[in-house]
Length: 170
Image (cartoon, rainbow, N blue to C red):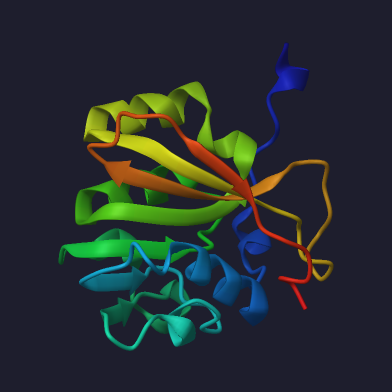
């Protein structure tokens, strides 16, 4: 039975930066829904943060720069990120305490674990959409499908599933 449960990611493997074209493509997919304030909780090299729409108030966290997202308290309307994969539950649970909408890039299977679905229910969130994405060629390759998942406070309807076209990882 233990062979069905993957080993946790080591924090050292969290430093996989999102290519700027992929971040731009993800932001574009959600651009018509974005409003108010937006937070980049794992800024990294700025692939998402540097491309947030100028009409939105935006801020960032980055552990390497002394701004720990898990210490962030100010409410925002949106979070869009490629979070550290070594602490997905802590990161997701905290995101739901500060934002009404979160978009996170991670393996799609991570979005639908029993624990994740319980957490979504506990915090009053639902999965509004899954944007399926091919892993950038520069990333470690696996058999797991990547997705940008939109978790939305109060969402109880069907999930919208779509696929990001090729060339988003240029």
